[in-house]
Image (tube, rainbow, N blue to C red; front, side, top):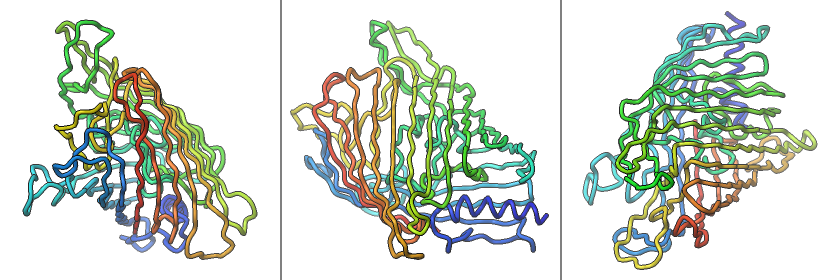
Length: 459
């Protein structure tokens, strides 16, 4: 029993304690349910508040007024996670909260106008994760192989490291969103209901799942030639999806107690991993040609590499972090999805110029059939003080997108800095991002920018 408790403690600390760059935090709000701590319950709460100044796409209105720029403050994420190891083999996980509440939207279903239930007010809590898990083969120090099985609303969605990213320790201010290619269509905020298997064999970590996607019902636009067919999300009585991710960890081994992949270890580990993954769903989209409905499979593949290493002299506590991923997406012919994070803009009916193809506000072509290459890198600047008041981590990211539905490929970038007040547990992040603005599939009229300052606290 002591051996099991030791392994569990190491996993917990490496995942949510030292990996965050704050040794004072330890395992956080953890409550032992027996004397030796092999049975416990742990709670994690976090808030991410955004202050933004955004250039709006052409044809945007904010609050019934034409707008080319907008400023706001919003709740990007307010979350609460609880999990409990009820025995050395059995664990239960629950995770709920809200996302994307602004002064114009993000409120409870049906809210509109002003007053007590005005638009943007009283957002509804919902579950992000809710699953049970049983360890068939326990992870033990002197054994290569481990295996756990689980089921429920889960985050083991395969494809890439970023597809299962933790939202607590991003290198950049947020995920690029296309890492969650089904987001809020056939999944529930990047999760699906299903069964999963996870574990390790030596330095190889594996994650597999068999899931029932949420039904989608968009109606395809009928066209007269197959070349103009456009696939849309319409799965009807959904068939089961399959997902998997395999990662070889060359240096330090990462914990896999929970699915959430760390974005930056801040030099507390030596990590170099190469991974590859997939997601497939049969008959998940539809298109219409001459009033004949065609069904299309979703086939998504990815390969990635992750590096996080301390560099330079040990007393300087410097570290570099890098991540690069290539996505090959096939949702069917000319599938394209425009996404906007916390969009405060709406369509201006009086606008007479060339509107943005993606729509108003900060919307952009985000997900589609085609290829995406995304790379990010950052460096934790040196500090010789044991407990500095602030650690600084500049970073940058680059995105290349080539979608079948658009005649031109696009590039965009993010530049910013993390200011760590207490590791990842208390940090301020400032980031400037660009996005291309298409007015037609063959014309990019330029780019728009968005400046965000985030305040993050988690306990």
